[in-house]
Structures are given as C-alpha cells and as structure tokens.
Length: 175
Image 1 (cartoon, rainbow, N blue to C red):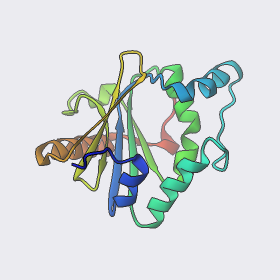
Image 2 (image 1 turned 135 degrees about the horizontal axis):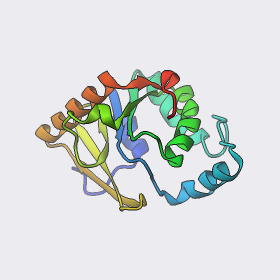
Image 3 (image 1 turned 90 degrees about the vertical axis):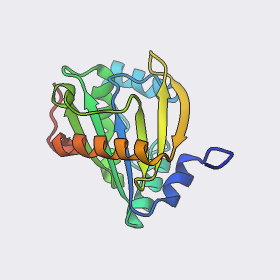
Image 4 (image 1 turned 180 degrees about the vertical axis):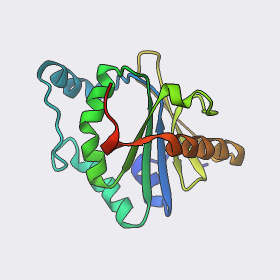
C-alpha cells in the first residue's frame, strides 16, 4: 500500500474494470450533507440537477470512469420501513444513475443469510478495498485500505450476493 492514502478520484482513475460500493447503514450523519438533508426534510425538495455545484464533480468523476469502460455499481441494504435519510438518498439516486452508476436496493430482511463484512466499502477491480468507517451516529470516522486477497474475495462475494437479490433503483419502491 502507498504511504499516503490515495483520493477516491485517484482510486477510480486507476480502475480498469469495476468499482463496486456496498452501503449498509440506515442513517449517515456526514456533515457536508446536513444542510441539503435538512432542506429536504423541511421542504421535500432535493437537488437532482447533475450539473449543479453539488453534483457536477461526482457526475464528472463517475461518467468519466464509465466512459473508460469501468462498471460502477452501488448496492444499498436498507431496513423497511426506511428512515428519512434513506428516503432522501433514494430521491437523489436519479443523479447517480444519470452519471452512469448502476444502483440496486436490498431490504435487510432479504440479506439475513448473506455473509457481509462489518463496514461499508468500495472495491476497485476486485483487488483493493477502501473501508468507510462511521461513528454510531453516522458521522464520517475515516477510511482504511486492504489488498488482502482473502478480504477482497469476501467483499466481492458479499457484493455479488447482494447484487443478485437486489432490486434495480428504477423498480425499488420506498416503504
């Protein structure tokens, strides 16, 4: 592993085949999302403009990777009924899809027999994991990397098992 942690943009730029993301929390408390989330809670309005200041950097990053032939997939395991945060995420996922991400949703009840790692992660080209750590209330608590073949296999297998059962974003109805 490099001595300094690569940025997400660098990790994605190094990808040649796939970048998969597994999200397993029902609530995140990421500080730079708090204003938009609060606005949505009070008004029901969510920024879904791929060209907005908020979304454009992400859209550019993902669409560039997809244009190079990288499959970018995101799976979310959620409890039902869903939290307000998941409703907010669902409302904004149209932008992820517009950027070229494939997104699926799996209810937690349907994930009970899948061996899952303990943390959310990104897996790049089935060879490098970026673990996403969060505090109990969902605040960002840092990242960690692993290229251990046994751990990357665990994550790849878990992601594929979730993906096979999950519902594509366009078909998932919030409950």
